[in-house]
Length: 242
Image (cartoon, rainbow, N blue to C red; front, side, top):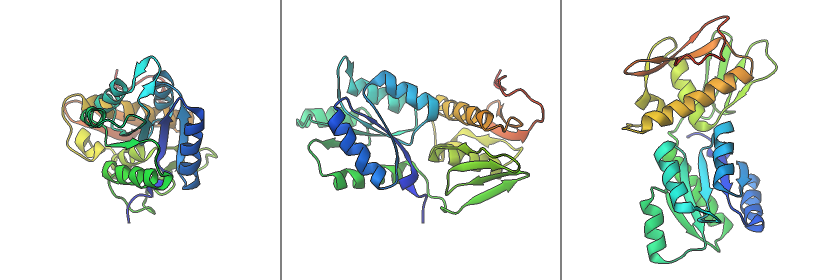
């Protein structure tokens, strides 16, 4: 059995409040962590603050072209993208899929069909891991099923996306050893995908700091990727990349 994808984090980009509410309610009913935003700038803000595993993207977003936003997501992140739009012309579908989006859903749609497509895209994007996978390194324990990293003696924990959980699991499995960028993403990467890894690493570092796990540090390894080690007393506000 693979990761429990119903715990994946989804951002719905939809400026029609009624439609956004329908999508959000149905996905939350099935256990997904859903945030709805009305625009591209809000999407970028929410993604920077907490990451996501999938974006459902409307194409009609006022001043911003949804196709350009889809291309930006595909180029700069590893998040899955499903276009959800009222544009049903064949050329619109071709343009949408050519942007790199994983799927194209035309309104109106059956909520259960959208749910099935969401799960299908998540299965393609997220490698399978046992939902009860746990790994302990010293006082730290990563619970893959709960998407959390915990530390003995701390009341708070670090809540992660599935992508972040997969990357952190790899770093902990190879503790104090280098892990390549392709290993961290779980696939071969080229070119701009190096930046995708850097964004996820930055989000993980921020969440560790916010949870009070300042001594668990991810260091860059030149020409390879990253390694994780414990550095008591290191100020996590000073990015090790510099």
